[in-house]
Structures are given as C-alpha cells and as structure tokens.
View 1 (cartoon, rainbow, N blue to C red):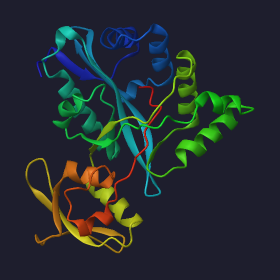
View 2: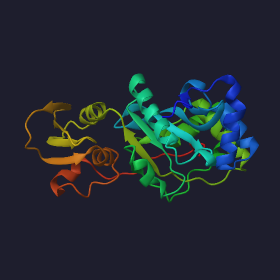
View 3: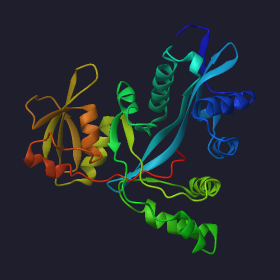
Length: 292
C-alpha cells in the first residue's frame, strides 16, 4: 500500500470521523449510529485506513460464538465495512480484510462471518475466501416486543430470548449485553418484524473445525482431500471422533475449503456422492439480530 495510506486501530480522537464515514456510506440516522458506537464499538477490534490524518476506510470486528454440534465456536462478525466514495478503487477494503484475517490468526479465532448488504456482494467477498453458509429465513422470528411485554424484568426477558435463540444448536449466540443492544435498536425502529439473515463465512482454521465436527459425529467414517487457495491439498481421515491428517491420496471425496465450509454448515451437500450425504445433512443455521 502507498505509505500515505496507513492501517491501524483508531485512536480516541477519531471517533467523530468514524461516525461520519458510517453516515456517508450507509446513510443511517444519528440516533442509530450513536447506538452502534455506544454499544458495540471497541477500538482494539476496529481497523481504519488513514490518509493524511483522515479516516477513509474502516471495518469493525464483533466477537460472538456460534453453537455448532454442541460446541461454542468463537468467531468475529465483520460489520461496518465502509470506504468513502472518493477513495474507492484503491483496494483499501481488501487490505483491511486481509489485516483482519491476520488478527484472527494471532488471536486464535477460527471463523469470520459477515452479512452482505445485497446478494451481488457475495461474489465480491468470495475473493477473500468467504462463501455463503446462511440462508435468508422466510419465517418471521418470535416477537421481541412480546418477549419484553411478557417478562417482569430485563433479565427474565433475556432468559426467554435465550430459550428461543441461544439454546438451539447451529445458532449464533447472544450475551445479555448483546440482548440489551438488540432491544435498544428495536425500540428505535418501533419493533419491526425480523427474519434470519443470509451470511457468508471465512474459515481461518480448518483443522480445528474438522476436529470439532469429528468429535460430535462419532459415527462418521470417511477420508477427504481439501484443496487450499494455493492449489495444494491436505488429506484427512475422519474416524472414531477424530480428524487426523494422512499421507495417502486415495480418498472418498475431494473439495475446496469453501465447499467444505458449506458442508460443515449444512448449506449444500449436492455435489457429494449420495452415500456420503448423511454425514453432512442440509440444515438451517440461525443468525439474526446482528444490528444489521
């Protein structure tokens, strides 16, 4: 990158600039922007590109967990990805995303998830290793307003919310603090109806995810080859609750990392031989109320 464009974490004096970039790019009302930065902003989890002391591009990482196969898997939710219009075409967001992935590696975060603003953006994020893993839901979610009205305290409302959303396997988990931010946003918007979101996932640590899968699927027994972005392949045996790297190259099936990601999330198993599909059943993975 041109040395005039520097990537780093935002400093305290940059907060007004961050809000200004958000407003210019997304067009949200000040009340909502203030909610986002009051409730979710963490400078150590935010990245900016600065040009001559001006913030021109940014992204924000939000820590969540995803409940899959009975495990709670940490991930970063990428939100607020924005570049000022006059600075687009300089690959600034590309640099920010790669930098975010390096932070994930350093911090031991195996997954990143984002929600594209529109369908066409799935293709843009594909170049960074993201693949669609969440369907947009058709069912309207349980009413948050009703949950609040039927509870005698905020804590009890969260317990009800938790039963609906967090205690379901294959779902993004929300803490009590997340719930309070969700309620604040809903009140701003007069409690609109909500559905599950579409989304895309990037896998940073495929070995970890395969190990979690194998441990939760003791009856699974197959071998596979996983082709990396550089066209090299790694070979695995899944058996008796373990995922072990192997040297032999004759395997039951081969796939790319994005294809395996979709298999693990139950998004698509159509390309697998029919006798192997039972190991990766298609399912709905639930993601909602992400302050999108």
